[in-house]
Amino acid sequence: MHTISRGRATHADRLERWLGADQVKYLSETMGKFYYPVPVHGVPGNVFVMPGGDFAGEITAGQFMSKHDAAAATLRKLRNRLDAQHRREKAAGVLASILKAEQRELYAVGAFASIDAVVAAYTGGKGQTLGFSKTGVASNAIGNVNDLWTRAGAPAAGAAGAAAPGGTAWTAASTGAMPYKNLGATNSGHYLNWTLSANTANMGLLLYDRLFSVAAGAALTSGTSTAVTGVPTRYQNTTNTAVDYIGGNFAFPANPTTVLAATAHNWAVGTGAAGMMYANQAGTAANMPVIAGVSACVVGGVDLVVQNWFAPLAAGDIGIQKLTNMQSSAAVATGTIDWVIGHPIAVNVCPIANFACLDDGLYTSMNLSSILDNACLSFLELPKSATTATTYNGFFRTVSE
Image (tube, rainbow, N blue to C red; front, side, top):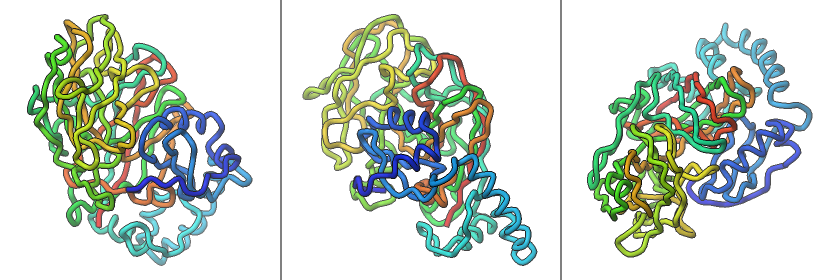
């Protein structure tokens, strides 16, 4: 989805009946400040949480049962249907372990001509399953956010970004990235589905492509205005219909290695050649609005005030092409911060601790969202409902054309 269009409002009662009122509220509060539509996974139809926290798009379920009740009914139907079909078509047996859906009619899905084309690609060497297990850290407070890039687990912990002005453009070959492979035509990878469990209830996890990061250095420790010249290598297109459009790119300051000193600070508003500055989705220079950081931000934490997982952009902007300058309002004598640019791929919420939540991107609003070649796939823990460290396990699947 490259342009913002609110479209038809989602039927509120059906959405709450399907997801549960608590999860709908969590998504609205967590994603409502974001400037770009974000797909809601695991909801049959085409539902997005919009800027402002409203939901738009059609939901084709929720009339009579929750997603858990529907899942049980769907599994019974699928088992009977696929047992018979598997005898006639080997690919259907593989699809049975991939998809959560009630219907299998042939229709175009994204760049694929039909569901059978997706199956053929997945079983023909263009599908991959990527497992992960990551443990976060104890947050400074409820509502803070953690970046799992430098945390232990699988994939292994990633490194901090290089110093300014150059920084680091990350790829699938970087330590810390999921081992994503380019299996099809150029930039033809697609998100298929995602199974996630967390040992703490009501936790949300964002799967994103980590495009670029740069160490703040003196911009943090002495409050010095610091230029950035390095740029990402993906999602740099200013055309809003392009698969690699800048729209949706976001930035955040994360602590990779050393706890910050207990110093009140914010990331200064951009003014001229000082403060926080960036180029927007049109490649035009812009000033980033001021936003407060976190005193004594923990290692692994995101240095933004509670309930914020991304830095705000100037009014009307919907993406960040590159950072051009960094500056803290106060000298934070000790600690480390990387400014990171990412692109959202998928979001999954675990309403029940230690319960595997399967969300698909084939029949719901993701609609086989693109994953670019050499994507550096990583995870961002959304505003936490508890301060305790949370462990996430699961896997997600991709398919390429």
